[in-house]
Length: 180
Image (cartoon, rainbow, N blue to C red):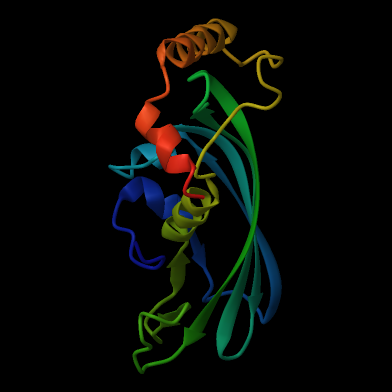
């Protein structure tokens, strides 16, 4: 989703009107909660409590947006399946240029025309948060956090112990190991 083209009314709250701003630095703050992620149909994140601070540096020919997103995202542990709050601290930068000529979409620059008066950053916030999610998510300190499901870990350990005992080594593998 491109940052300057959000059509959902609830995501319009994530727009920064830059037309009336003087040149220089300006600060904006947004709250990102469950309602934000419910607007994205296939969102990996369902529950979150985040604060997004945007430092906007307005210049003659461009806007420089520095994002800092902090808070927690509720996610499931891939080890014990318990839900736990994952702390997040994301820092990103986006540049938006004022230009009438089209810029390749491959470039990481947003193109703003003279008719644009605001920039919607909902798509950028969504993208930054989803990219920051770990590929595998595990609650810290196995079994010793209040979120960790100790019963699940015990059941998994029993199952893995049983499969190792029941498994006997195939003699063909032993013969193949001699070739090393």
